[in-house]
Picture 1 (cartoon, rainbow, N blue to C red):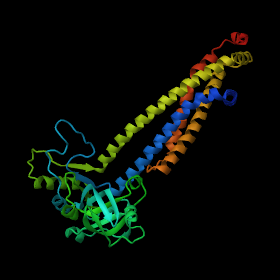
Picture 2: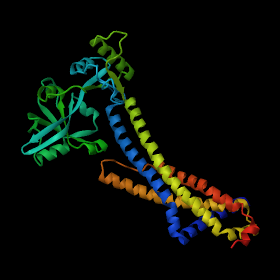
Picture 3: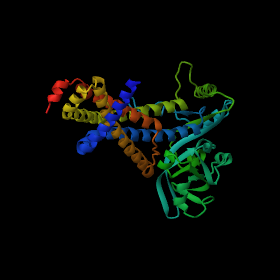
Picture 4: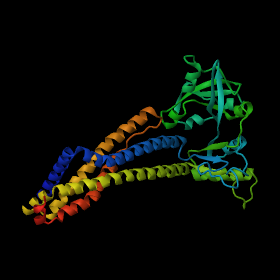
Length: 415
């Protein structure tokens, strides 16, 4: 009981002395903890950015369906260029006819053609260039986070008849038509007339904020009217509810190999990209950012830690006589050690609290002025506080140990 009381008293005394040091040496203490502030703010801000981006991407993955996968000409998740040329060189294009073939498989509910391009759209005097355009099959809206605010998606009949129809994003429709009702009006895509059949609004996420103006057209109409390059065409395969992803993948591989007359010894000249592969690639990318975050914050914390060591060594020197008096009155080495460790931890915790406030404010500012939905995760706050406490112990250990080892006689003689 006495030991606990002494420990609590030492902690309380250490905290009080730490605040006394801050008040007595504001400039010195402020410069000391600024590295801690920068380090913690960096950790918090980077965590908020990565968490916001990850949340938006994961939401899109979930909307696409966990059992669905992509058939592509090459692995878009790990693109590399070498002396042998681009990764798609020597492999045949994925075709809409192959999408129709896959859609007839019993384990496949839908096979949606997917291709992105840039197009020019014009209505009256309003002309926009480089608008993102998705060349797609029917049913793409079932796997996109958002909803129609006017009209509807183009139908299977529109697709089969290659009708020149288009779905506009709400932002694009507002920019082109203003207060006019857009459905049924005609726009020019690369000079060709297309009729607007629907207006789609994506749910607020990072992608909706980054790309506000976009269009979706049937792939049959795009090939007929827009002179589309199908080099990067892919197929989104939707697995039947009563089938497994593995079964659907096996059926797709078999059907494509037979269609392309591949021998058993020949490798696939196409790739299957599963959702978990895309998530894994994203996790690898965010791991690199996380490593950079740790590196940046570690440098700042090291600078702050050196400052903590310096100020604590100065404090030990300035209070040598005080330490001698306390030892003469019965204070143990353990109590002296604990007192100075608590002072060091208090300094770093003050820096971490300031860093949390600054990092949180920067994350809120970033979320308000950029498309990144930065939000501060609770684990990042806990990690920052723990990291600051550990840093305080590590950086304050040597000054505290030196104070506890002072000879009381020599300390009392110190001037």
